[in-house]
Image (cartoon, rainbow, N blue to C red; front, side, top):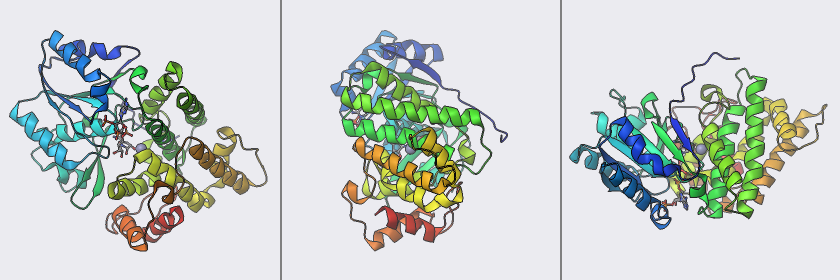
Length: 393
Ligand code: NZQ
Ligand code: ZN
């Protein structure tokens, strides 16, 4: 077992009507002047925003608002938020939405507190010296796990570069999670979110670091539960227990209990971020499109690990004398699952016909202009990355 440090400081308020507690949570924190940050229309349509306004009024909390965050959140909106927060001396950002809104809120929070340009923080040209403005969230989409992670992912429209920023100050202080708020999710977002949850677990599962049977069991059980409950939720979007299981799994899959982020693989995420940066696809769908190709490309590094996943999670019979065959059947079984929930298993299935030029552009950006390799399970350089995009085409 590797040595590790574990930090998960976000207070979770989970259950029906939990959003009604937002006023008292902010009052307890001493916050008086907040920014409500949200996406397009979903939180308005569902009446959630109206309930938030009412709760804040009851608690005598002043608020400003900034909506319009789009999936794969844009840097221009982040600049807008920074300006707004500075103009109104905002002391807390409340993100009402999915991963994109939460990530945009985190980026605004860094931008307000640090003298450096926010994009320089994302590219590593400058460093965070003064933390992040306090933030919290009411989650409406279980997927990215941003409510418990210290990661923010933003796309710069200039060059369509999608980059992430990880820092200890970027945790939400609280995350309100009412599974009923997810009843309105379109099937595609439910499935894409479930795929992201599965992938956060698998990225950690595929490690060359030491593994611990306890952590493997947690990860495998989480995967089985998410796969089962996604099918249930797609059939009956108002199944509370299924929605609740998926929602909690989203947080657990990205808060470090299913494995150590430092020892995981993360190639599929790096490969996908370039896809959603360039083509604006849903992150989870992009992951489903790329994963099988990545898996086939790296499988020989440790077929036994893939075979363990196949047998323990995907119900594949164990061919003890042929782990590679078991592994391959497992990869096919997970792809079959992705198809069964309406997810693509190739880039073509997302309506994109990749040209050779685009493959080279994606790979070049993914390798940070030829300056890095990706992958903890198997290191991948520029030609490897190109080969995987070509396979996933
Ligand atoms: O904008 P609105 O109208 O709210 O609609 C959203 C959006 O169109 C809709 N939606 C959200 N909640 C809903 C709803 N529709 C109906 N009912 C509801 N209750 O869903 C659409 C997608 O929302 P988005 O926030 O983009 O999805 P998700 O939560 O999957 O977040 C994706 C982003 O998170 C990043 C991804 O790269 C991507 O940019 N990630 C962030 C991570 C992190 N911070 O730790 C880790 C992840 O690996 C990921 O990279
Ligand atoms: Zn993800």
